[in-house]
Length: 207
Image (tube, rainbow, N blue to C red; front, side, top):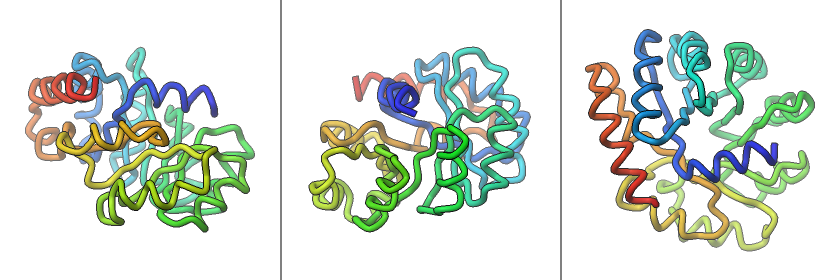
């Protein structure tokens, strides 16, 4: 899991993707790679997620995760389809326990000290702060993270080009999850060239 943390830290930005049509997955993955960000977190918010993950897993060099994982069965399905890491919106002990027991990298969502301590009980040192902006943003993150110097965070929810730099400047932030470069309407309209350009702009902005 430490190796996965290092990979996510190198990316800095994790594109959080909602795919309605699995046939859009491969061109989206290529657009992100061409833009200099070979990473995608495909959310289980649509029925197309498993097939989309399978398609993306065939692209060389793409760091691939599954997000909005709510059950152990979804976690199993995601890994079977090629996901390398799991992300959950909240802290589900069953899902976290399954992943930890099976050596699957997982970043569960937290927004309170109690949830952070639950993650520590499972031996985790990286969690998702979600929904970041709705829960007070960087100010709240700094406050709740203060007692936990061993924990790193992946803020997600409301992250955009205007505020990602501030989040990444905080030493306890490993990376940020964001969807603004992979908006559903851009994917649906097959505007993959635009996604590539947005990716390049984001990479240049965060250095």
